[in-house]
Structures are given as structure tokens and as C-alpha cells.
Image (cartoon, rainbow, N blue to C red; front, side, top):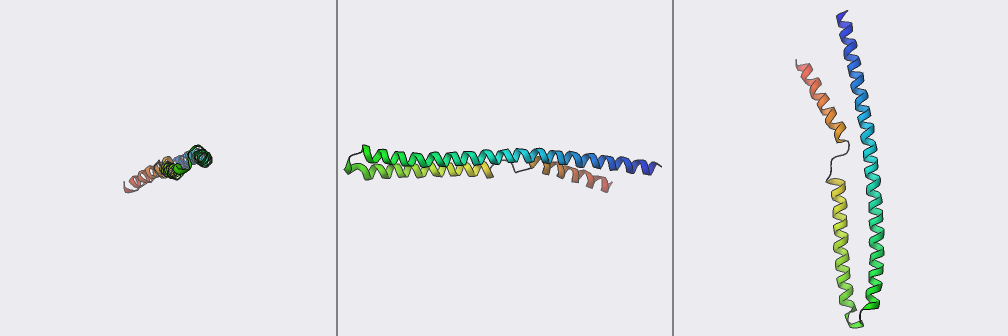
Length: 123
């Protein structure tokens, strides 16, 4: 009778553990979804604004500068825009790859569960 009760307790504990892990995964899935949406919106907005800035700046430089200095000014603007674009790409990559890994909470919790189960098996 004690063995059946123990098995029942272990089964209910495992069921609660699995339920909590599924809830944690669902919550993290929502967070990762929002993170991806935020990243895409910022990337699209940044690319659009950068493209518009390039067009407007080029037009203003062509119109505002005397003819003999236009090539120098346009080259300077091009270098500035390339550096700015490289910085934007670098920040985007850092945002995607430099942060926490996706589903970090779930993987950490599953690792702890595995270590706990292994320690129980060893005893």
C-alpha cells in the first residue's frame, strides 16, 4: 500500500513539474515573440529612415554645394552613411546574438530537473 501511495505521489509531482515547465515555456515563447517583433519593427524603421536620409542628404548636397566641391562633399556623405549603416548592422547583430539565449529560463529549469533526477537515481 505504501508503494502505491509513493508511486502516486511521485506521479503527481512529475505531472505538476511538467505542467510548470510547459507554462514556463509558453511564457518565454510569448517573450521571444515580442522580442522578434520589436527587432523587426526597429530594423524596418531604421532601414526606411536611413534610406530616406541618404536620398535627402544627397539631394541637398547636390543643390547646396558649388560644382567644384560636389564630389568631395558627396564622398564625405557616402563615407558617413556607410559608417552609420555599419554601426546599425553591428547593433542589430549584437541585439540578436549578444543577448540571452532564447528560452533560457526553460533550458535552465530543465537542466536543474535533470540534475535533480540524476541525484535521486544515484542515491
